[in-house]
Length: 148
Image 1 (cartoon, rainbow, N blue to C red):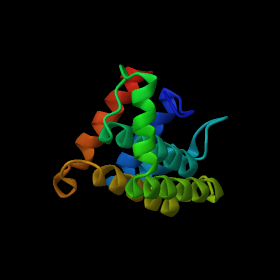
Image 2 (image 1 turned 135 degrees about the vertical axis):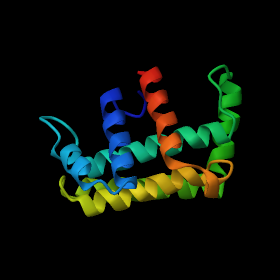
Image 3 (image 1 turned 90 degrees about the vertical axis):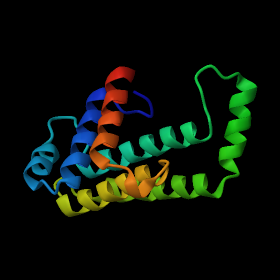
Image 4 (image 1 turned 45 degrees about the vertical axis):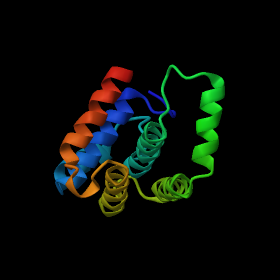
């Protein structure tokens, strides 16, 4: 997994996004309880949001694994000069700061961060208003399992 997240962390964050979407406080509480050494849930969901947005931005700008260093530099310049990409980075930076400061068991904050992450994920899809959330999360879950 990239961006400092393990596969287990990505799966836990995706489970939290799904639980928040379904308004399932019982599942969110279980995920928030975590275990020894696990990141607090609000911080994890925010960190996963950054990972997801970075991934979606790279795809939106056409990044591919087979690109040369020169092509990657061109895309990096394009992303850096794009206001939407810069706003996305600012949003994820803010969510990460908020997630870090929130109590591990603060379900209200976790739900707000999760809803914002989901909305941001949907915003960069082809038709945000028609993008179904659970299949979108399933796609990210599959990506996490295949990448890990």
